Length: 114
Length: 116
Image (tube, rainbow over all chains, first blue to last red; front, side, top):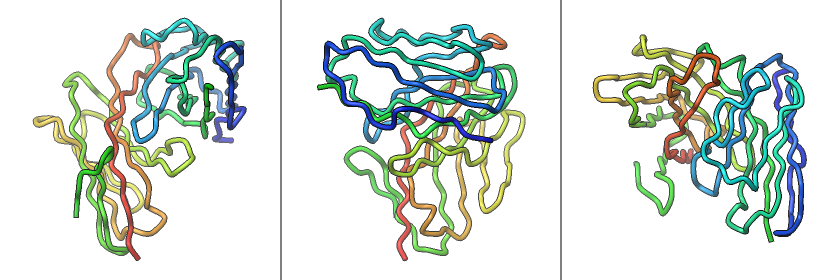
């Protein structure tokens, strides 16, 4: 199993809603990531979890709250988002952070904030 | 030929020809580089990687070249096929604290269009 699974695939939410994005991998990877990708732009790193601990936060606004319940799961909790937060949210995982190993990406959640 | 579109540079290639996609990276401390392919509506897919102690690496129909002197990375695709049409991103790893996780920074991307 070399997949990173993200749910839901599409999400439309209002600016007062609370929602969560979910990511799961069963490759035994110990590093997991959230990226944000706007149309026709490269993915931008948001958060890195290494061994279930938050290791990198790229100055992301607090309306985005990551959570890593265990080594296979990664969540992104959303609250009071703005329309400019509409984007493709990508989850990725890699073996760990210390070696030269590629990150495997999920298919993303297409988020629209209305 | 290569042209700069409104948002993404585009490389138009005839089916069967070789493609060369270029990438300039900015951080001389980057030690690991990856090429990703992203098809419409999908997440990035790993193609090939290279460490900074190498200058060339070959895969199936793909070759990555690294020139650290000028901080340049290229991806060569041999005998380009219609299925190669996608956006290609280079990514560099900024070495962070060990076990802190890979901090991959993506380049701007190049769209490859394969003409039959």
